[in-house]
Image (cartoon, rainbow, N blue to C red):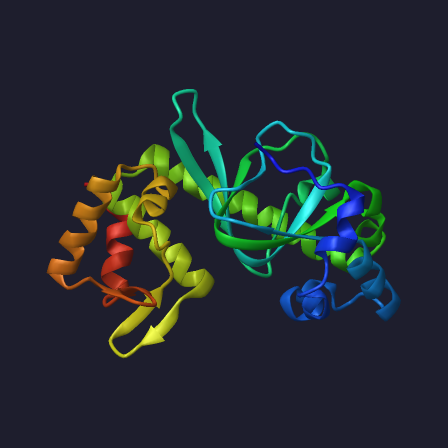
Length: 243
């Protein structure tokens, strides 16, 4: 069941992260001091738990959501309950930005992963952002990038076998947030391997078998900070493979 926030909840929920708005969301740095304060006053803070629903597909786009802490999965659910995670949104990122660009109904459902803190801006206060050309230009760029990411996911799911799909996903994570280690690079992956399986549309046992095969061959290693990739060039070959 999706949560519903009323304006009256605003005073009760918005406080702990208030002075971190610009630190967490640099895209608002171009706002005047007055505009930043107005935005802070109108944001509604909610603290949620693992598995909580933010909204469901086809609900009206009546708000945009800023993720202050935790993660949110954007998912599509089939009639048999099968889930495909099409995006993972973390701290400092927005979701529901289409409400500012082309408001219709939600294209996906959104679920919390772990303890999550969000800031909600309702439709009544969209003008605080829509009247700011620099902010809107950045939000449009973020929206177009999300569309490109989803198209890449659909290409992988429809046209590539498991090994290639997983390799393409890891290379995308490498571009977004990879970090160097002694023998290669490390990329963040979900703590729950089932979530990673849902992101590339494969069963968990098959995903685990592929990861173990790569580990035995020296391509990857498991670490506390994520998945270590020991041979990026070889991973790129796997991503292009159709055999």
